[in-house]
Picture 1: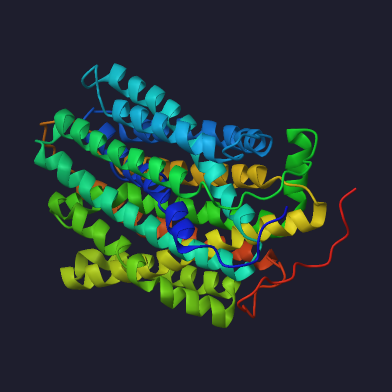
Picture 2: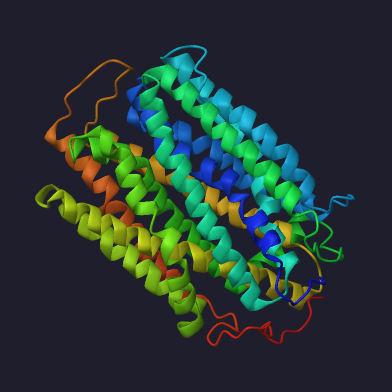
Length: 455
C-alpha cells in the first residue's frame, strides 16, 4: 500500500471523523433503548428480548469479513470504500426508522418484526462500518498521524454518541412516550445518519486511498493471514470483550435510572455524564499515549474504567453527587480505552501490509467490526439474562409494575459488577500484544518490525 507520510488536511480528518455520526448513532441508540423498548413497551420477556437483540448482530459476525473482502476488491472512480459509505449509510437510515415503526403494535408479532428489521439494519451497518474503519490505514502510513486521526474520530464519535444517546430518550418522552414516542425518536436518529453519510462521503473525496495490490485468493486464505497477525489477534480479543462490558452498561442505563435511582428521567443525565468527558479529555489521553505509548495508555484507561464501574455498585448507599462523580470517571476511562484501541488497529493493519505486501485492510476491519458488533450485542443480552434470573417483570406501554427488591438488585449488578469484571478481566489478553513502534511516539512514521514476507 502506498499512502503519504505527511499530515492529513484538517478538512479530511474532520470530514472522515464525522462519519461517526452514523456509527455512533447506530452503536448507541439500539444499545440504550432497544432492550427497554422490547421489555417495557412491547411486553417481551427480558431473556427473549436480549436474544432478539443478540441474534441479528450475530449475523454480522459472519457477514463483516465477507464485506471486508468485497470492499478490498472494489475498484471505482470513487475509490474502494466510499461507494459503500453512501449507499449503505442512506439505506441504514431508512431501515432504522422502520425498526421502531411498530406496525403490529405490541406482542409476539411486534417482537418478530423488530428482530427482522434489526437484522436488515445491522446488514446495512456492516456495509458502512467495515469500509469506514478500513480507510485510516490507507489514508496515511504515519504512526503518529493515525493517532491524530483517531483523536478526531473518537472526539466526534463521543459527540455523536452524546447527541443521539442523550436526545433519543428526550424526544421519545416529549412525544408522549410509548410507540408514538419511539417512532419520532427513530426519525430523529435516521436524520443524523443521513447527515453523517453525506458529510463523510463528500469530505473524503480527496483523501488518499492507497494503492490497489494483490490480496489472498480466497476469504479463507485471508482469514488465515488475519489469524497469523498476533498483535491484531490479541487486540481484537481484548476490544471485543471490553465492548461487551461497555454494552452491558449501556443496556442498563434506563433500568438503573428507573429502579436504582428511582427516577427514569435521569436516563439522559446519566448518559451525558458518562459520555461528555470524551469531548474534553482526548488531549489528555493523547499526551498519555505520547509519554507512555499506546499500549500502556490502553491499560491505564481500562483500569480506570474497571475500578470506577465496580465502585458504582455502592450506588444505593451514595448521594447523587457521588454517583455522578463516579460515572464521570467511568467516562474518562472509556474515552481513553476507545482512543487507544482504535488507534492501535491501523498499526496492526500496517504491520500486515509490511509483512505480506498485500492490501487487505477490509478483511482486518471486517473481523474487527464483526467482533465489536458481537460485543455490542452480547452486552444487552447478558444484561437481559441477568434481569431474567433476578425476576424482572416485563410490561407493555402504559402499564406500571412494581419490581421486587431482588429484581432491583439484578439491575444494579448488571449495570456495575458484571460489566466491570468483563472489562477488567479482558486486560489479561493484552499481555500478548508485542507490536513494535509503540513506546516512544515521535512526529513521524514509526518503522514496522522486520519480518519475512509471507509465502
